[in-house]
Amino acid sequence: MKNFVEELKWRGMIHDMMPGTEEQLMKEMTSAYVGFDPTADSLHIGNLVPVMLLVHFQQCGHKPYVLVGGATGMVGDPSGKSDERNLQTMDMVDHNLKAQQKQLEHFLNFADGENKAEIVNNYDWFKEFTFLDFIRDVGKHLTVNYMMAKDSVKTRLETGLSFTEFSYQLVQGYDFYWLSQNKNCKLQMGGSDQWGNITTGTELIRRMGGGSAYALTAPLIKKADGSKFGKTAGGSVWLDKNKTSPYAFYQYWINASDDDAKKYIRIFTLLDKETIEALEKEHDEAPHLRVIQKELAKDVTIRVHGEEEYNAVIQASAILFGKATADKLREISEANFLAIFEGVPQGVMAKSKISSGVPIVELMAQECDFMKSNGEARRALKENSISINKEKVDAEKTITQEDLINDKYILLQRGKKNYYLLIAE
Image 1 (tube, helix red, strand yellow):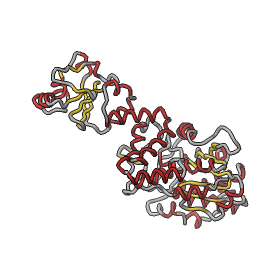
Image 2 (cartoon, helix red, strand yellow):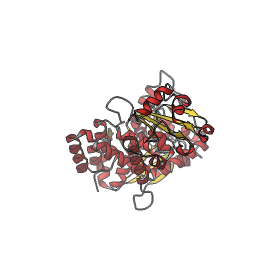
Image 3 (cartoon, one colour):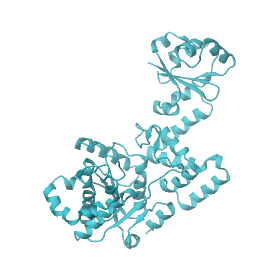
Image 4 (tube, helix red, strand yellow):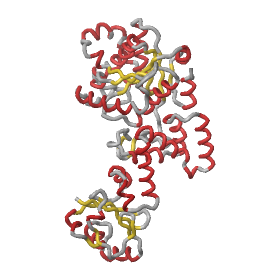
């Protein structure tokens, strides 16, 4: 069997590991699980680290389980949180679980083979478990002192921690016990912030006579500049293209710093060590070509969104940074179009005015604030520096409905970098 631990080591994906874990994995095909919290109807790129743990685990011949927290999602994990979050209804949790499962199918083989991935929902074993039975049969095995010693609890004692959140580690610990007894799961994996919850599970299994259990965590990803991984000015980078467009998704990876890209390509792709080291050598010889960033962005974008969306992203990038025509602008999706020109100054005008035709000078200086005056507009046109939808125009141009992209947008441009997006409503 391929050595899972060695694979993670050279990729920089091990933070903590319980003694005996590697020996267990080399002895036999082992089952392991990672839990996902259904607080949203999409995973974000921060979730990709535990996803990739499962991907490598499966590729090394072991059997991965994806635990979706139908029950724990209604409680809330205090790990890494400064405040208690809003609790969710069962309907909200169920909707989120179904959406996340579709995304996980892009990464793991759920279809066939002895080690095919399986999804389990902890609501299935908690829905009939009464509170009195739980505190009698499970709660008695762990002391309050043991639970209070966890970092996820200690860091919240001053600001306040409800009993609901305090009990979370016991509920997650029972997940591990249930899976060990019913699915022969011997290993739980997750991010380093989950170490306390995971070891509560191994301790519970030991005290309840459940046999051997192991724990492995990956480091939390930090960017070289100290900013938070997976966050932009617009919020989280989601796997759902309706929340984060494929273009914006691709741009997140392509804009990674050299130091970050060298780390990310090991964690988020399946490229082997020899290939990555060759890319690193090529990159170091010509950093301006951004070889690693391009390979990283391509690999992750195709895995999440598919090759067709990746090709559309490359086409969209060429429009922004290269030569393009109005026809090319019309070929890209509205989501990618808006993502390309996110942050560009915008204005709104009535579509009814455009239907009767608007002279270009009037459009630029009066219908929007792209130009300060008619005189400035005429001078810019005379200098041949004005483009409409990426095509040069002169002072005789009249803007009509035919100029609208997606029946809604007009892209004004002065020179190479000065853009303005006019929205017709």
